[in-house]
Image (cartoon, rainbow, N blue to C red; front, side):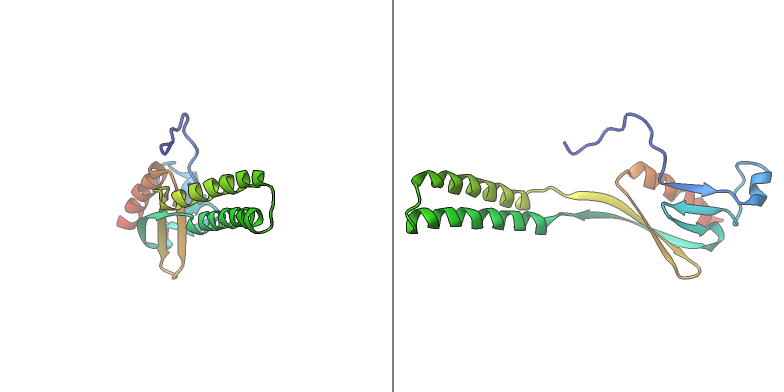
Length: 153
């Protein structure tokens, strides 16, 4: 199941904190003194210079290769024990079981199980880079629409 269905709207992982001067007047009025919060990071709106959006796609290959290698090593121990050290033949069941697990782990490596998420980098006039990542394309889209208005004014 690769598609997630949201039954109710989650609160965004970014929000705008109004400064004292804009909180007094109209609620929809955004000033440069307002602060944009991206998770635990924050930046003043007048300090935002530009932004970049990219889609990141990665796989956990190292962990799956380690699992497959360990399963094959355990299967090899059982096979050598039965063939060379005269262990009981019932230990061949362990060899078959661990071999199947190793093959399944290697099949996962070849498979197309990718982790995909959107990463937004905000560049500031002071030279800082703020990174915001989310698996929800809608959340990143709302942030990009907001930043397009802020950078465009």
